[in-house]
Amino acid sequence: MAGRMLRKQTGCRIVIQEESAEEEGVSMYEGNDGNRGTQGVELIRIRPHDRELDERRRRMEGRGSSRGQQKRNSRQRNQAERIGMEKARGERGRMESGYERSVRREQERNGGRTIHPQKRRRNRLTGPQRLTALLSTCVCTILLCAGGVHFAKISPWFEVPGTASAEEFQGGNQAREVLGPPAPVFPNDILEREEELEYRHPLIVIDPGHGGTDTGCDRAGVMESEINMEIANRLSGKLKSLGFETLLIREDNETDVSLEDRVARAEAVKADIFVSIHQNAYDEDIDDIKGIETYYGKSGGSMRLAQLVHKGALEKTGAVDREIQGTGDLYVLCNTTMPACLIETAFLSSRSDRGNIVAGEYQDRMAEGIAQGINAYFNPKTMYLTFDDGPSAENTTAVLDILKERNIKATFFVVGENVRKHPDVARRIVEEGHTIGIHCNSHNYKELYQSVDSYLEDFQKAYDAVYEITGVEAKLFRFPGGSVNAYNKAVGTRIIEKMTEKGYIYFDWNASLEDAVSQSTPEALVQNAVNSTLGRKKVVMLAHDVIYNTTQCLEKVIDSFPEYEMKPLTADVEPIQF
Image (cartoon, rainbow, N blue to C red; front, side, top):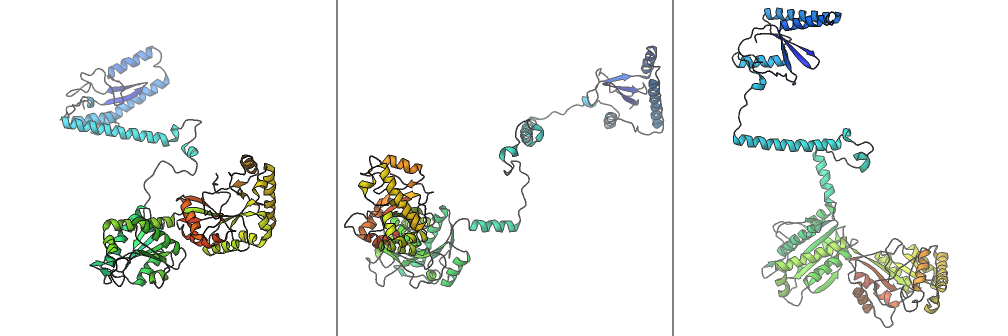
């Protein structure tokens, strides 16, 4: 560059002093009256004689005589001399500014011709290049905007005074919305998660009977092992769709699995239940010997599981019911510790059964019925067995014995007079975990419902009897004849209001054995119970523990509802009321 330039800041201007008026080539200021630096500050050319005239004018105005101005002028002269010496030695100016360096480099690249950076000719973009540049600009703008919004959300600089922060609004224990990089995953973590998933849902072990060299029974080219495998695969799929985990003991027809290994595998995975699938056959090919048989294991819950699986299969297929039976000497049922059952879905010796079981559509219905039973086993409905009018010495005792054997808790709405007659039975009701409630004291409808006061007086007598004998402060009660009957039409509503004010809860029923009628039979009572239930999810069953036939049919009644879990009433149960 022909002349060295000095730059100094004066207010808002940058003054550039040229050491020499001599220039080479094209000046960077040529044709550019309004020159601006890299930061947009106007650049003004001042030659040496201009500076002298300026200083003379300042002295004439009385400002140039100041000591400070003299020192500044001296420093400027020293600086100019030092630069001249450096140039003489051939050094490149150490005080060269960034702007000057850019100009010098342009000059070197262009063979000595100096071009102002702002005058550099821009290359024109082609059509595709312009389109690509436009799309890139749009994408970057969107991403930058999104990032800015995200930054504004999480930055404390953008919080409005007086407003709650995100953590204060969500609660201190809430997870932050700002997510960092994903945490590293190690092999042990994966194993732990797999174990959690394994036991998150009930695990059903499905055992397709026989397999490999043991084909089981066969008739007319139909082999038991193959039919078992087909039903097992269909069952597994249906159970998985219901949210269960499944494990097939064998997955093909070529694998031999011993009885011991079948049990060992189920125990090793800690199965929740074990279901074995088989076919049956009679010695002779007789078509009339056909249907479904189901066996249950020795562990608790096996009988109920068998009942549900058996019932589901019958409902879906319409097959002949050959009932459920105990284990006998079946190895897989005798040696498993979880609830277990074995279902024989057809007789291959029966032409009609054999024709059904080889059909894919029938196999699908069979699997659906078994799956329905398993689902009901893990997701039961609720039934509350309730007994009125007791206690009695013989019948209530028989009822308590059956309930104890079945590990079932029930509810007894007792009569005060009977509590005083049979205090030991009343105490046993409480000791064995059943709920005791008030029915009445005398069970005389006309006297009981004569007025509100007559009812309250009768209730208090029964309440006192229960409290004195058992120590229970009963909160539940049942109206004799129900909350709506022919005797309490005039006073029923007011009695309910008074009892509710006192904190008592009354329960009616939505199913009944109808065992209070005369000339009933145990079989009729069971049918009444089944017919009145209507498949409801919540059933309050009415029975009477002073009726002999009730004690004779109670076990059959319980067995008729394997899909229900029997529970006692409590104050937390939403009452069934007429």
